[in-house]
Length: 455
Image (cartoon, helix red, strand yellow):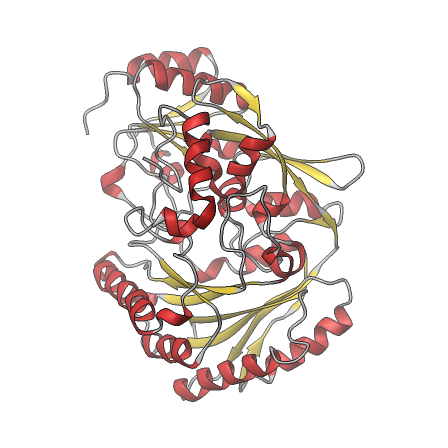
C-alpha cells in the first residue's frame, strides 16, 4: 500500500505532541491493529494512540485540515469490522481508559477508550457496578452509546440509559460538553456526532453477581433444545422471571464437549440465596452436564465469557430481533443450529423491565419487549469464512421470511452491515430527530466512518 501524502506531516505532528504513531512496517502494528473481525483489505495507513482529549482534538484538526480520512476506534469489536478503513488514519482511543468514581459513589467518568472489563474492574474495587455487555474487550463507549444490551438491562436499564453527560471532540476539533439536545443523539447513535472522550454514567452498589454457564447434554440435540424452549416459556408464565435474572440461550462449540445448548446466567441482586434457587430451576431445564455458576466480580464474569468468541475472526455476525421464542422462531433456531460450520454459534439478549420505559431523551428506538438473536457467523478459520457467512445470512433470511409476524423492529445496527441497516426503521419515529441532530452537530459529515453510518 502506498503511503498517503499527508503521512510525513502527521509523523512530525505526532512527534512534537508526544502522540504514539504506529506504522504498518512497525513490529507491533499487527498486534495493535488486530480487531474482533479481520479485514486485511482495509488496513489503516497508520495508527495513532492519543492519551487525552487534547491529543484527540489535535488529531481531528489535523485530519480535517489535510483532508485525511480517519476512523475512531474505542474497542474494535464491531461485528463487521468497521473500525478498520483502508488507507485511513486509525485513532485508537484505548490508551484513554481510566474510570473515575465520584465522591458520593453514584456516578463515574469513563474515558473514551475504556473496555467493559476495565470499567467493571475499577468500579468493582469500590463494590460498584454499571450495566455492561458480555465480552471483556468490547469498548464501553461504543457499546453504551449504540444501545447497550446485556444482563443488567432488565434490572438497571440499557447502556444508553446510564449516560448523564458527555465530552467529545466535534467536527471542528473543539472539545465540547454535550448539551441536552446533543445528549439525546449520543444516547443511541453517539459516535456519529464526534469523538467521545468521556462519558459520565450512573453506577450502583453491588459486590458480586452470580454468573456462569449451565450446559446440557446434547446427545439428542432436538430433544434438548425443545426442552429448553418449553422450560423457558413455563418459567416466563405468571409472575415470570425476575428482572434481576438474565438467562441467555446459547448454542456454541465447547472444547471437549462439542456443540452444546447452554444457559448463560447472571443474577444481579444481592440476595444470592434467592439467586441460587433460580439457578436450580435453570439447571433443571435439561439434562445438565456441567455448570459453573458462582459469585463473581463483574469484570471476572466478562472474562469468563471470552472463550465464546475469538479476537481476529473472519467474516461477520448477524442479527434479528423477535418478540418471543414462539413456536415458529424456536423451530427456525433449532433448524439452523443443528450444525455449526466453522465453530459458529448463537446467543440471545432479552430486553424487558426498565429498558422498556419510553425515553424521549434518547434516539434509541426499540422500547418494546424483545429478544435480540445474535447469529455468531464469524469464524476463526479463514477457509470457512464464506460458508459461515452464508450460514448466518440463511439463518437471518429464514427468520425474516418465515416468521415476519414475530420480528420486532429492523435489528441492531452493531450486528448488521451498513447496507442491511434500515435506519428509518431502526430508529422509528426518532429517525428525523437523529438526522436533524447529525446535520446540526456534524454538518459536513466529518464523522462518517461510524455506527450508525449516516451519509
